[in-house]
Length: 270
Image (cartoon, rainbow, N blue to C red; front, side):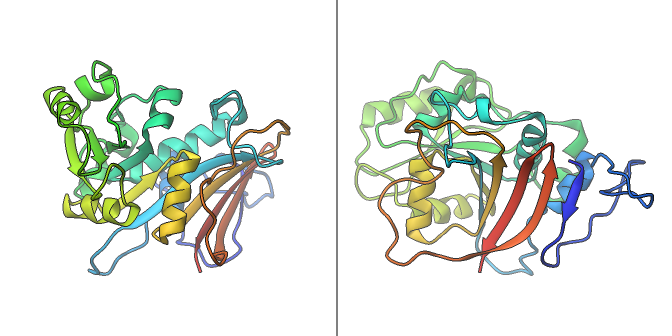
């Protein structure tokens, strides 16, 4: 990460390594350390107020594609993955839709030494939990995401989920959380359910259908969007899908970073 363009007041970045933040005094660009990125992307202070802060992290090409051949990796970059890892390291829980978990080959979040002290100081577990949103629970419970996570994987589902699938999930070690009255998950109830478990720093990585549900429900607080300097054409999904909102919701640009043509934007609820 080589340049920071602050467009509104942003929490100051305090260097905790010997690397320099942003443009140096001689006008040259300097690499940002992971600690400096963590400070720049820190969750807002809640000042004792209850509730969660839900941020999304997505990537999109210049022509609006959120994926290429069904995956986000082809439109990403090394810098994008550094931001991706930093946002995960700051979160209590990472929320993802079942289809995204399948397509992207989700594995358990890992503990990273660079963020260990930061997480300890915040009272967090060594790694964030992964929360999979699934109505059917048609998931492969033999995968490491369920068999060997540092923190038990959560599955958010509806009250009408098949009992045998719930039993299979729990047998594999997952914790099933009911967050809807029917077969699906209610986005606002999902947020409330995670807060009830002590998770207030929430991060969703989509996919587009899940992000669209959070947007429609009005529970998204922040969007971290990487704009990839690529064009793909085709009919790939946008970053958010599903029914449109009645009135477009405005978000305010909080910060903008750039590296090699990739723009790392951060928007907050206006």
